[in-house]
Image 1 (cartoon, rainbow, N blue to C red):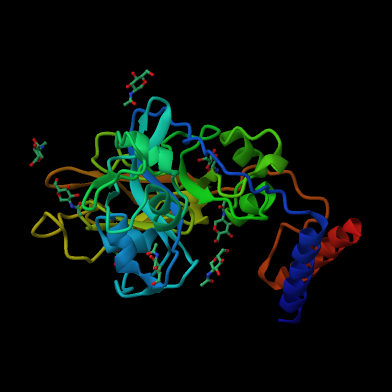
Image 2 (image 1 turned 45 degrees about the horizontal axis):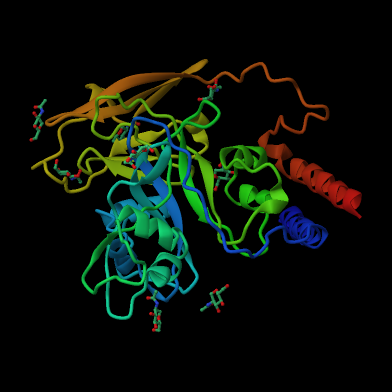
Length: 364
Ligand SMILES: *[C@@H]1O[C@H](CO)[C@@H](O)[C@H](O)[C@H]1NC(C)=O
Ligand SMILES: *[C@@H]1O[C@H](CO)[C@@H](O)[C@H](O)[C@H]1NC(C)=O
Ligand SMILES: *[C@@H]1O[C@H](CO)[C@@H](O)[C@H](O)[C@H]1NC(C)=O
Ligand SMILES: *[C@@H]1O[C@H](CO)[C@@H](O)[C@H](O)[C@H]1NC(C)=O
Ligand SMILES: *[C@@H]1O[C@H](CO)[C@@H](O)[C@H](O)[C@H]1NC(C)=O
Ligand SMILES: *[C@@H]1O[C@H](CO)[C@@H](O)[C@H](O)[C@H]1NC(C)=O
Ligand SMILES: *[C@@H]1O[C@H](CO)[C@@H](O)[C@H](O)[C@H]1NC(C)=O
Ligand SMILES: *[C@@H]1O[C@H](CO)[C@@H](O)[C@H](O)[C@H]1NC(C)=O
């Protein structure tokens, strides 16, 4: 465990040094965030990071954004499916919101959701910047709701809040687009690292040429790594997108699919054991009598998985997905540090630590 502590302390030293070496790269001008580029003909699920202005509950946030099921909110936040709706959310805590996205005229907007009902003493600016934590600007709400005078909104008015989103592939891969409100003092590098995306990808997706021109309050399009799936294009849940570390229920809640780095980011689906929505019972989901949804068998260089392929009005489709598991002829690394065997684990950590310390040294 000593190595782990050394590793984590050198990591925090490293991030501390990065912090003092790179000055904050945001400026605090009044932003006019452009909507995200979106040209796909499909609708898809997209995400935004909502920073709750007040201490509240998941149920309140679910209702504010009209997320159809609590499970879908839990899944994108990597919270266990048993989490209750009363689960507390702290002031300033970020909650990931899932919503359907549609491309209109080259930009992505939330597909007719959420609808916000104006209450006493509301103003468009307050609704945009406070209630929806700067995910939209008030002129955007004004435009899509055809409001001639921004100062004239009436209690009870139902306003569509157009959240920014996209359904486009990025660098030839399916991704889950995540709208992130840039906090004061953050940098492209920091945000990219936080979400496990290459800084160059964040810059190109957002048309940023100079990372120093990042504006606090701007909504960045962060393309999260998504798992590939076998869902057919005529299934109602196509494209079934799940970001790294999240899960999603589909096929009327009969199937639970998770996305993580194992199996080269292939979506892992299995029967959910949940009470179905719309169906009286879950139809069977198997590839053969001995291979149920989610079962895998491995042989020397391949792994066959009974994978989820979508659903119809009365059935769940499956397909036998075969994956090559032999390591691609990767060039051996110089010191062999990547050929980790179990007993060499601590030695690799030591090597990693030394490399990190050398990096820190180079910064000084
Ligand atoms: C939330 O963040 C804002 C801006 O960073 C800060 O002014 C406020 O005090 C924070 N509120 C709480 C409860 O932490
Ligand atoms: C798309 O753009 C065209 C031309 O600018 C405009 O006439 C049309 O109303 C726009 N459609 C939507 C849905 O905004
Ligand atoms: C947050 O709470 C304060 C005090 O309770 C209230 O005045 C304010 O309207 C709330 N903001 C939102 C966005 O609900
Ligand atoms: C996926 O998530 C894991 C665990 O949170 C993280 O370590 C990894 O960097 C992520 N990978 C990508 C490509 O996002
Ligand atoms: C149940 O069916 C309705 C109508 O087809 C659909 O809108 C809804 O999303 C379905 N529920 C689930 C959990 O899939
Ligand atoms: C992993 O997935 C990527 C993209 O889906 C693919 O190009 C690559 O060949 C896969 N690698 C292996 C070892 O299956
Ligand atoms: C096959 O999948 C079922 C349902 O998920 C599971 O209960 C069972 O243990 C799996 N069998 C094997 C051999 O993996
Ligand atoms: C599935 O159900 C919908 C609505 O109930 C219906 O419109 C559609 O024709 C059905 N499709 C098939 C293939 O049965």
